[in-house]
Length: 122
Image (cartoon, rainbow, N blue to C red; front, side, top):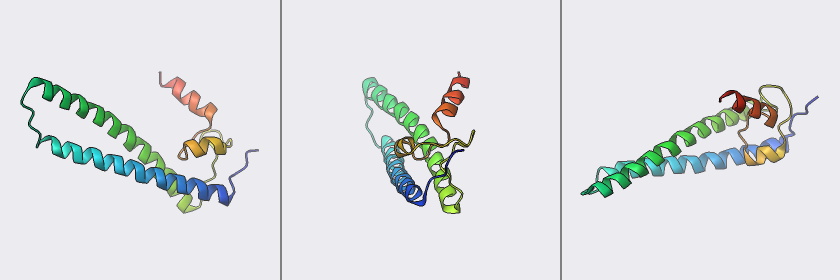
């Protein structure tokens, strides 16, 4: 039987989530400001335009990834605030270890289920 996390661990995860959320929101705000500034840039030659386009494409990729991560973070924060966060895998109810949660505090799945999900995406 998997054991749920104690309140001390949940508090630690909550702080990690809030910190991650702040960092991602800062990154997203920076990307938005940079994109707003693109229209003010003097892209007078093809090289400048190509470099700006490449940077913009990279930023869009980062933005999408960060928004997905932010969604997972908000999901975990919501569960903690509602008092229903357990630290158990949402697929098999196995314990998600604190080592994993310290690295990825928004993890919804244990390693085995995550590997299964990732394997089925291919």
